[in-house]
Length: 173
Length: 277
Image (tube, rainbow over all chains, first blue to last red; front, side, top):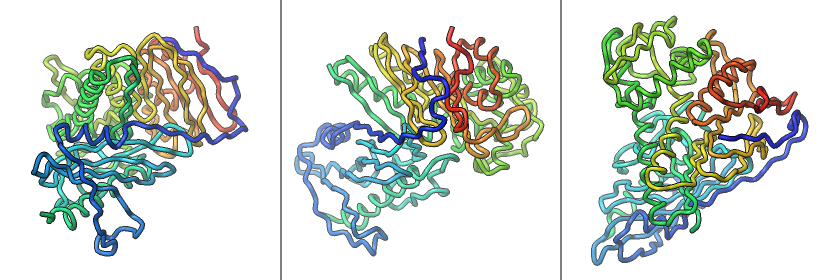
């Protein structure tokens, strides 16, 4: 191990520079393939979202795909974004044909300041979760002290997508 | 061959894994295995989850032997070593006070913890067994994230990766021969291009309110201070940031663990706590 300090002693006492910080992890196509390796087709779905019934903002427009394996539905795939404390996080959610969460991936994030994005949304708590289960902080998703808004918002994002699935997509023939 | 980089929410933060100079399919497999290991560490050492080893210890009567996973045993062993070396400034038993202050949620437990209990009351026995001499609650939040990063690096290496970076919300470890610059984010949310690191770990902790407690007195450390510690293992770097926040004259301790530390506050800016050898 070698560590070399790069800054003069005393720097940072007065000068404050906000640095934009961003990371790109996966493209939507990569995330789709990672979630559904044997899918034959990803069909974009233009769902009509009843914002009032779902309790979401009118402007909420997640991207939705129905995933086909031959003539059978293999599952559903969503791309959505949530705003954390100061960052925008784009993520994808994959559901199997019965509506269970199989994969949650961060696609990218952008934030107005440095490295730390705290998300207390434990992945295994999303696994096997269906829209019949309440997804809420302080209930079955445990929040962690010190977590910023990112965690709440990612949790809420997954909850909204599961609601959308059960209200709009599950009944599709 | 390009880098492959993935991020998933684990350990209460965003865990970011990057593998360089490896065939893409192999890198993806290595990264998936590393995330699986991070998930295992998370499940075993979560303060909150009812199935974690820590929750199992809270259900067993004090004085009884509880068998835990080898990983939990290893982290408890390191916790005791760092607690001993820091004369209790690092103490995973501050959880009781953190719950009282509302920093941690009230966990399920079969006993009321003894407020006087401390790290010496955690007895490690062979066969991966643990015995609590007094009723106490353990929180590994100050060390398990670093351990998860170390384990992820080991898994990546076992899958053939030679150049990689694992970053769990600011606790990171690099492996490989190339130096890389690491930016440090301070308590005020400012990013500094601070450190060039080769094949080692860097952890950063910022104090804010009652989040970090001084193990000896159980009092909150001063707010607005940021500490970065470089060490070979991320577990050591992670744990020592908490010690340095509590005790900013840690020369002997840093030397004992071959670590370097830097501190930032808004008044004095950055200063090294021990000059590099």
